Each structure stands twice: as C-alpha cells, then as structure tokens.
Image (cartoon, rainbow, N blue to C red; front, top):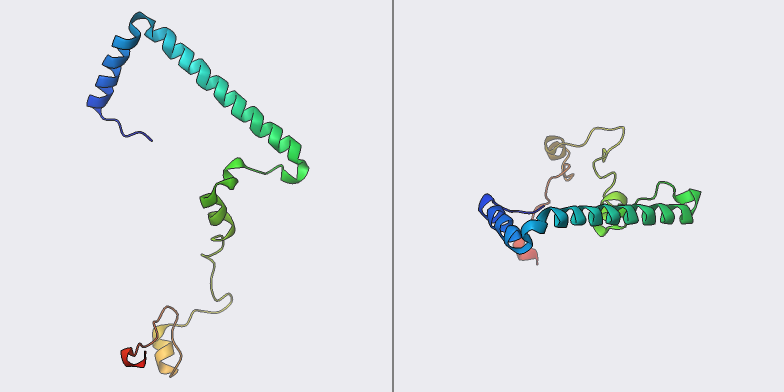
Length: 115
C-alpha cells in the first residue's frame, strides 16, 4: 500500500517525536479511536443501505460498484469457458488439411497489395 523504506520510517518517527513530544501516546490513541469510529460508521452505512434496498439485494456488495469490478464481473465472466462445448477445438493441422478453413487462433493470410 505504502512504499516506505527504513530510512523514511526513521525520519517519520523522529518528526513525530519532535512535533508531539510527550503527547505522542495520546495522539496515537486518539488516531486509533478515530479510525475505529470511522470503520464503525462505514459498516453502519453499508448495513443501512443493504436493509433499505430490501431482501432482493441482500447479497449486494459496495465493491461491485467499482468500475473495474463491474466490468470483471459482468462482461469478462465466462470468457475462460470452452469456446466449443461438446466438441474439440480445431487445430491448425486439421484446418490446413481442410483447405480454406482456418484453425482456432490461426491468423488469416495477409495481402499487402490488396489494400
């Protein structure tokens, strides 16, 4: 998440000691309480949203609203399925023996003078 090295961490600790001095433990405890309270508020908002949507959306997840997750879930789902269910995929060797047919994944011939 954060790319902080040992030297940078040492500088941050020294700065924290200089800025906060004797109140560093109090400041850390207060930051922890604020983070805990923020998490509780987020969980309550999520629960209220799920309850407000009704039983149809009980499996609703907020993360599904992220564009990458939406695309991955709804558009790319099932792409790894077999393109030829119940049959074997044609191979380039089989396509070559069949004449004009191209095998699965085989590129068609290209004629640069035709364009």
